[in-house]
Image 1 (spheres, rainbow, N blue to C red):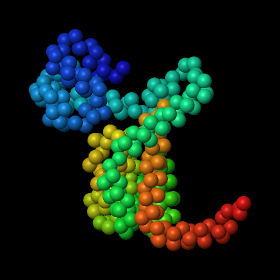
Image 2: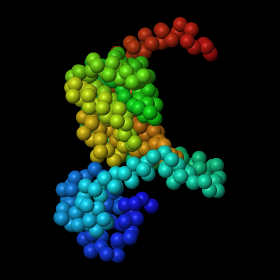
Image 3: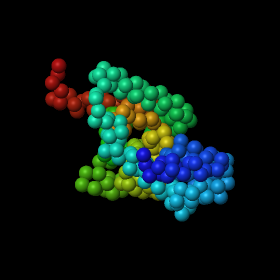
Length: 285
């Protein structure tokens, strides 16, 4: 149990009815409360800001800001791979292999279902249209998010020109994005725990006038300011790392929609790509 949760549990008997309402809401929405302003939280719960401040002081904090910082620290600690490994894969008797296999598949199926339900048609259309119209498309993802970013870059590069994967090898990302401007698009994969390098690159590109398509988690309040178009994905996992099954499904959709709407260019570039690969790249089987 986190320090914040322990404080809630120990002080519950002394709560007034309104403080119990505050405790119930915060406990059930920690990921959102971590980034709400005091006024936003007050409106969500339906109590005064004074009630929330008093509640935080009952828990031993100086005020709302200190309580919120404690919540953020707990979320960060619990999202670390080591903590997630201990919580989700405890060192106890293992379930039958077929049960674990089924649970993993069902988890990803549910992620895909939630991601599909979270999409807005206008945002998807705007994303595809932006990719088609862009002079250049920059694709960004750091650490584990590099895998879906690489997949997007490899597929998108087969059907349109000027696709650039930001690899940041040797920390040369300034040189990789220096030419980005108003006519360009950045497709950024940004998931908890959010990369500071990614956020810095996105901020620079937005300031340069580039449009940012942000593929991120369902609870994206903390990073909503980074994206012009936000495409949320469910990434829950039974393991210690995020599952990228749903982001990959969404990536496949964007690539397919792009190829369908930009068919002539896609066909031309694919033909050129295949002519290069035909020079002894495949075994010919």
